[in-house]
Image (cartoon, rainbow, N blue to C red; front, side, top):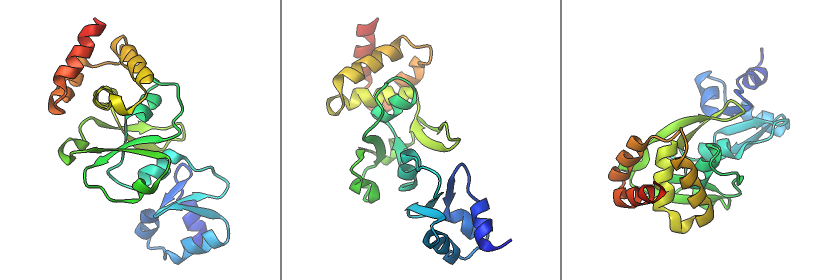
Length: 195
């Protein structure tokens, strides 16, 4: 088997990360050759897709930073608590981040203290079989309450109501996150009103 065929066999759910090619000790020159031969496409630094496949924005954006976490309205959409397909993706990143996500027009960046960045992070499996990092539902509700002024108020209020009446909610976890994020009173007041 030649290197080009070997590289084409390394694609997983339509995507290939350069790291996989390096692990197999295949010279990166062959990735460049496959791009020039129009067999694969470079989506971003270290990420490729086969030419016949359509790139998924979730995977492309996730590849731009190992700390990127889908959040707020985008997370609500993934969990079925919003029916509005994201035009701009809400991504939370660590404070002080300076990278390529800031240059993306289809991204709303939210900054978070590094010690709380991974609070409530979970792996979310897309229909394609690929996995992305997203905040769990309870952390997402805390985030939308915290960022309410920056988001669509109508969608936020509907999502909070839907969450309150959902069997997917974990109130203990919600209040635990709210305490750590210093928004306990705000979250508690909103939940009290819904009772």
